[in-house]
Length: 313
Image 1 (cartoon, rainbow, N blue to C red):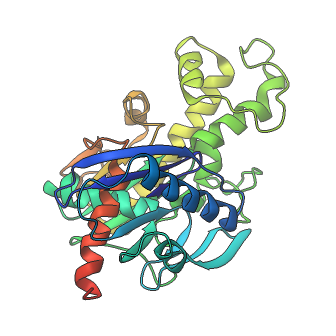
Image 2: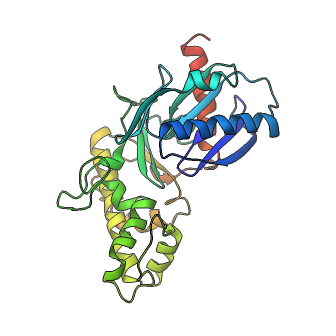
């Protein structure tokens, strides 16, 4: 099960990573309790409408935020939405098989390690740029989770110390508010009235979202506002990548998430990257070759396999 900002994906996956069946449901992430109820309702429906093809050995659950995969406790979505919940106990009431959970980007990194970029090197960074920004560092084949299960949350790496743009983490100038899909949408809305010739020149209401593809298209058409927002995002991601190069000395980066998947962003990123800083990236910077629809589900399957061995279930 994969809980994202807009959807819950449930699927049945083989040991080899083949997705046998799947179904999507809308998600609610305004609180952990509401999100858990969404997952539970989806799981009940999945059993009724899709059913299980094989003999289920375990459940793997990918969640946004901090997750203690040792105890099965979902700690928080983000610092302002924190309420520890025993997800394993709740889900085993519905399907009585061993259940294991982890952060969603952690699970996607597991899939890369076993079936993707990990076939090239065991030292890499999986960088996900979608609605938000997060990464996981893989060092000698081990994904760094951190003592508080918060390692890799580079969406909260400050890249502009003079910025006045606040982040939910309490700081200013974090990469997520400048370069994620949501961050770029918010920047367009914040600056829209300052650019009277922009196609985005109007007032925006509530949670109305500006699609990343619209911003990319406007950039290519010479829209000044789009160019300001995208150029800032490119500089931000370049800074994040080069900071991580200096921090963990990887062989390469593999990119996932909706912002980067069509290759447009990566192509525009190249001029902002220093060859001197990146000289040891023997595997370069590449977009994932795995099916992004299922990458996290595949990671959940690997999580189950490893959990069954680790906990001798």
